[in-house]
Length: 390
Image (cartoon, rainbow, N blue to C red; front, side, top):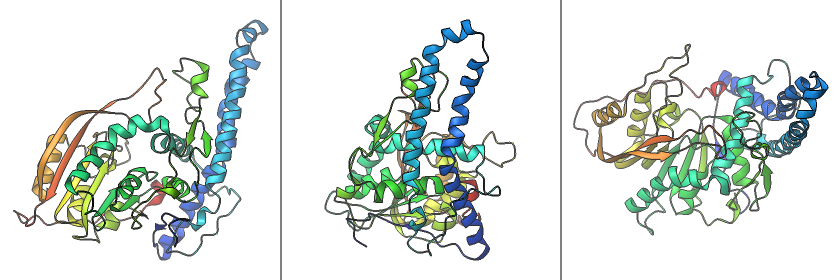
């Protein structure tokens, strides 16, 4: 494989019935991307229909707003074209699997849900965060502290053989930045939505600012100006094809616990960014990080503890505090070298919105003890990958 043509491929090997279910999940994801235009137009036209029912006097007050809604439709069309390009040849994403036959039809059985469509919208915002100039501030908040720390741990000239794992890699920007700095890096991602996006940007975007997208066009509330809703960003802000990166750069698909509990004492560093709170049982994540690190290896973590499953009534979840996380990590076999609190960070935030979220994130630098100080037995039993929940 020539690095000039393809920076990385994504590895994943399902078998048997699992392969059948994963094929369906994969098809549903592609269907979701392809349904974006129809679904988004339906939402954008709702206020138009309301205006049409109003008395003429009220309609006159909303003439400018009606013109704005027409521009929203145009912006949605641009997004749809981008997503159409993203799904071209997407079935060739996996290097260790036969080519998937993607059905161009959207069958009723595999029709996307509202949750699926929300994930498509999230992909557009994630492109802004990871691969646009507009996302630079968020990357500086979240990625740079981790990158700087890893650079200090492993000086330049020593990184070629330093194996770094980035779980929850999203669209691949953080592992890409580490690979650019010479590390042998692998990103791991659970969501087919994100995997499709990372494969596209890393392998098929050959120019800077090649595409224009409208990541905030779906936000109909808390807009100061109409123009804020339809403002565009260009992606990518760098050309991955021209980067002089470590050729040992890859993306691996699958459930983090399932994949990496089978790789004991393998990685020199694990870097987690806005990741550990995506677990239903965060202890499983910490166990797996510890198990896959070599003795003396480092775990670097940055992010909040929002716990994605906390308020889902039908899902099991635990939500330990940062104090608990530190205690659990030490019990499992980590030495906490240092930690910081109060790191201001945001995630896919619309900077022009009247409503913005800002996290007071935590940072941890931990080292796996070369010899466990207790008899803690690591047990990683969660079954996966389960992409139907990606």
